[in-house]
Image (cartoon, rainbow, N blue to C red; front, side, top):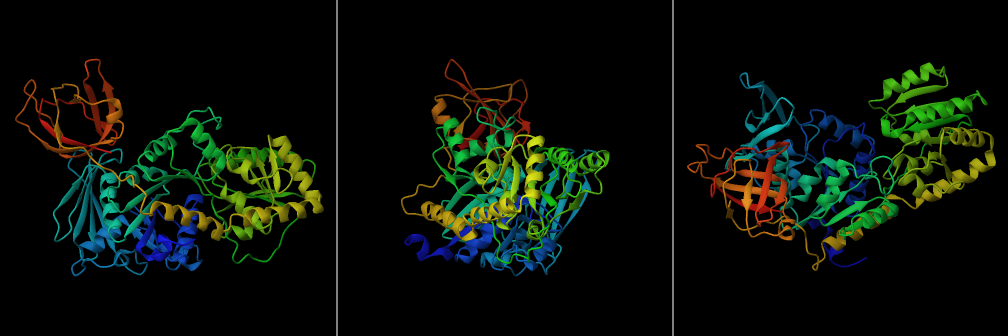
Length: 557
């Protein structure tokens, strides 16, 4: 490929947005790390940006660098570390790398205190010189009700929510590149990424999982978080899904989605450990959560053990269901044959020792562990579920798709006894994994980046209306608009309150909101042409009075 992108890749920043970065990371983080490493090797300024306060971040960076899961040229940004460094005396506007997290440095600290008897808590963030560069007020539920940035040489900046502060940060970070591609890997960050306003920014959302609720097939309800991502995707440059089957379902259900791209996860086997495969050891590598359905695997394995008591099962992973799963193992009398092993790192050492891996997840966006298993010649026996298992596994060729525990037990016994079939499936699985090599998957990301930074691309960065005032009084928390159609208002998601005139009152009461950015919570279209707009800060919907002409505001996309 040639053209704009390859003439100047160093001017293009690719920033994956996560909540946290942990050395004991799950599938989403592993995907983000692998992509960042591959794109850095292509010459891009590749960065992982984390937004949450995390005192273990620097230790995680050390661990991830040491085993090369985190590429040596991939930069790590953190919201708090960035502003801690920016606020230090002597630090001016330099390269973005000046603000990367440094595993050898103590960048900032936090102190907390309760505010009187209000139940509110104040968090103050101090840089390495003791300057308080950020303050936030948190309510009893943990919801941030205000956050303030105090950077020397700048005006004090106040935000109503953390997301508003994150948007401000991402907009600022985008200024360090000619183009900045933000990829929202953390599902909960789709709001912030989709509201970036920088004109040189491109915004990409990702769906790492099945967007359907039970029974997880077309026609099911869309989950709340996935629904938010799909809704936000209308305001972004691309929505990336992992399989073509999911793309087809999304197009059929949401015909207006015209920015879908299919880019699967990649799997690397650069330095596979020596093969030490056991004929009797089966494995599960998974989060121990309800959706992973580990109980079905245990029931299937109990059936198989009744016919072949030399088999054993190692379960690798951690999660909220760990105690329940251990209790089930003990109650089934299999504590010697079925063992919880904890976190698997590296997973390659698990898969090269196993006869096959087992998966009973009832819902998968892709199933990274399935691909990782295949990469090391370990066939997969999986419950047939959307989307990854049915797209990655060719039944009877590189693994098995099963419908219940009886069928899974039968396939376990068959693979344990049939060396010829096992060898054939092992080879076919390696071929499937090779189709998802980091290089091939990186090609797809490079193609998308090239498309989004081409001169003819019209970026979907957030924009706003002209300033307007509320047209009538309300005692129910509504801002009342006139002369707007549903089609005109469909492009807006937020409200920027510029100023509030508290001299105007209804029944002696003034509007009690502060200037700032609020989410549009609800729009009600009346027969007389008025539109009643409800707005909110986080989960708090305003319910007070809004006197006529008291609020000057802009509508924001």
